[in-house]
Length: 122
Image 1 (cartoon, rainbow, N blue to C red):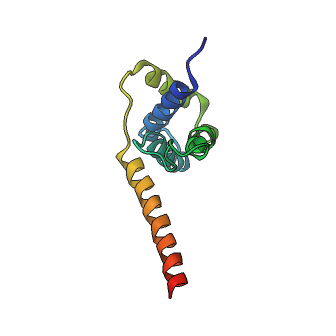
Image 2: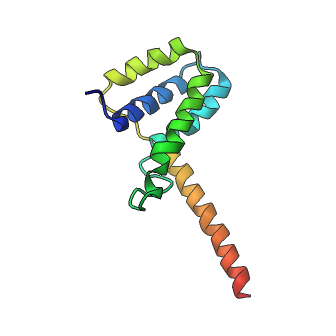
């Protein structure tokens, strides 16, 4: 039996993280890859996993879609090189930027919701 989907996503996100730092990676791919890796490696999710059904949407839709887009933007040989390194490394990186992005989105949603509620009470 092969590796689990979660393990595969971790390896792919790690490979993206490595490729973003590689000067051979095209700039547009780097820009996409920064957000993909930051979010995928973030210690928190946009939609917490404890929320039934919605909590796994990022894990089964958002992250794979971002990985798919990144893969289309990077030469196959370059990504294969980084995948091999990611497979060998046992320590996975964590993303402080991903944490900041998720918290900023939560803050924006809270601010919009507060504005909506405040206008209804006036």
